[in-house]
Length: 495
Image (cartoon, rainbow, N blue to C red):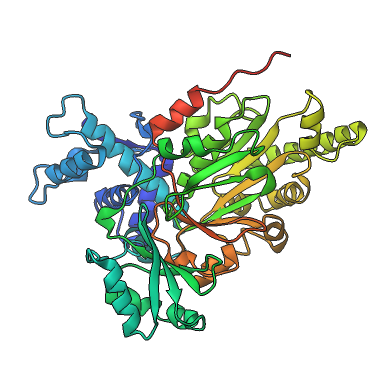
């Protein structure tokens, strides 16, 4: 393939970027917008989906000469080949099958999708690019090998007397349990967090209380080159089985390498929020694939609503899907939520007739129970923006869905009062916060600060109802791993 093809929606985004963001005329070369989109896609840790492999010119098509500057004074063809070779761990300089062109198109189209969903024409485009490309990349210098001794010296420098009682290393963080000489020094330690980061040459340092007298846990970011991803194979065996949980989930590992698990049936609803590319999709895939581990189509249905039209595509052939498939049209999403409210009412009526208080009791005493139904919305803000009335069925499900086995997993990059009314926030009390820009954003999600100190790319704070907030590095699932999980679903029981 010697050309890059984009859709009609993509072409609209290109024109918006050229006119509204770059203040250019229609005569200026559009490759500027395509190169920006390429950069945005390369900022993500995961590979773009094969869904972007559409070579039918619906919206626009661009030659390599336009995109790469091939044959011109500013020729970036070799640079792009090198970057994509490193990103995909393949040699694109001896490319005989057109793989370079395919990957170039995938990244450009994914980047345009990110602009379409993450930027509005009324917002500053350069601020959007800064947040997406620069603000979440901490400038870290490598901690010294004797980091423990350096930490003690730094504590002494700020006037805090402590000793290290426990030290461990996680995927991205170094964890130290400190025994303070005086419990009143904890406040001084918190206030000096930025000073400690400066002295040690690290990213943002966070603190938590493990429950032991005079002990505080300090989490220090490792140098970025020493980060490692948590793979699905590392955590899949930790997913709670049916004896431990009705809807067992393993998100990833905590800073000391312990699995972070919970039962969605007890949550009973989840809000997942953070800036674009902070890892919301990573968390969603971990949740969905966890649910598939121990549930066949008789015990679980999934209603997947995907305004971006790409994140839930791997699940479109899954037999667990509620309704006619993955929903990408928001008008259909609103109708699906209303259908689920009707399903909830029907289940409540059945339970009342059978004398059961909830689906779990029904499941324990009879075999004709309906499956749990988990509703996952990939970007709640898009749904509410297009159909504000969709909030009504969402609130009803949030208020009453638990008893009938219907649960919500709502993800958004805009957790504000427009997207989340007070009534909806009150009834979706379990939260997963990913990277945000300001402490005020963290308070909206968690009712507490801390998410502004996260490192991005799946680094999260989990606060479930009745539990303390936990730090977790969410597991990353590749496209192949997701496809393998979808392919291994258990067949239905015979009727």
